[in-house]
Amino acid sequence: MIVYDARQWTLLMILRVHGSVFPKGLCWALPNAFIAALLHWMLRRYTPDADGDGVPDAIQNMTGVDVIWSGYTFVLGFLVVFRNNQAYSRFWEGATLISQVRGEWFNAVSSLFAFTSRKPEKAEEVYAFRQLLIRLASMMYCAALQQTVGMSLFCIRQNTLSEEGIAPGHLEFLEAANDQCEVLLQWVQQLIIESHDAGVVDVPPPILSRAFQELSRGIVTLNNARKIKDIPFPFPYAQMLVCMLVVHWLVTPMLASLVIESWWWAAVMSFLVTGSFWTLMHIAMEIDQPFGADANDLPIKAMMKDYNRSLLSLLNSATQKSPSFALQKMTPAFVQSKDANLTFSIRKRLIRSSSEEDSEFHVRESERLRNSEAFTRFHTDSGSGTPRERTFSERMNAHEAQAPQGADATEGQDPSDSKLAVAEESFSAQKPAESILSRGFIEMI
Image 1 (cartoon, helix red, strand yellow):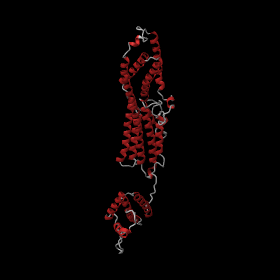
Image 2 (cartoon, one colour; image 1 turned 90 degrees about the vertical axis):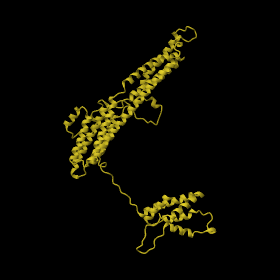
Image 3 (cartoon, one colour; image 1 turned 30 degrees about the vertical axis):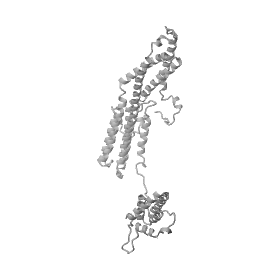
Image 4 (tube, one colour; image 1 turned 180 degrees about the horizontal axis):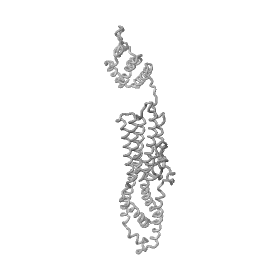
């Protein structure tokens, strides 16, 4: 597959030959342009002109043909677009399905690694189980890719993990099997059952069934991907489309030489129209089969190597153990520092509310809070005989009683300043319970 930066649309992309369909389109467009120029010269030089108006009789007899030809070109364009849409859908469906196979099977292997026993006496058996599991998983994914490609691009023994330790008889049987992927899938499932019976896989059966479900979904998805290789684009569509393109290639230079006065423009227009149709056709043929060794096919070998790296990462000791984490405990000093920041936020909010409407809003909210019991202190010491600390409403009333009234009041004083002072007194408390109350007061404001 050609990897490029899709964000940069430069002229260098046009000049790139590897993976391009322009050379194939030029093979059809250049001869067509030459034929159009040649026909244009022959019609003007050797065609008789009976009425002597300077226009050959062949051109006069072709009047109205261009209108009918435009309808033919429209139908052809519709079929070419339909063919490209189907090829594009097949390409992305193939890429999606083969990626889903990788995800399902890797998740199954990862789950089985987590399901293994943690008992010390089972350590050696667990190690052997994990080693065999990743080798069978690698061989199974490699066989799946080989089936979707449909050709021997690589051998299983060359692109999988080391087969050391696997019985040679089983490997010979695998080489002669009709469907290697199905055989490997059965080996993996049998390995899981045997390991569960031996206590190596130590999880309840309902949880273990998750691995079987992921393995089954992977093989079903693989068969959906294989249908793209096995079932081509319907033959009647392909036959009709190629036939119409050939007719279009033959007729276009004739009409261009008759309709267009200049031989130069006749050649140019024939080149552009014919080249565009055949280039689009070759794009559809290029991406119709996403599995292969062409430049625009999926990177099968790179996908296999990436899957092997993911499997090997499961054997790392750091992957097999969850990271440790130290939780920071919340002390009263830590909570009070957070309350101080919240109090500062309240002050800024009240300062910004300088309009008369906002001031009235804060007065109403203060009245509502003063009449509620949401801020009553929870900590009392009735056993020692100490008096109960005053509630928020009592402190609010006491503060308003001490404030100057009438003419003694400070001119221009914000009516919310007194509420702010009481709020700050409440938020400067020294007990965790008051910190909880402060958060409630913040949310209500």
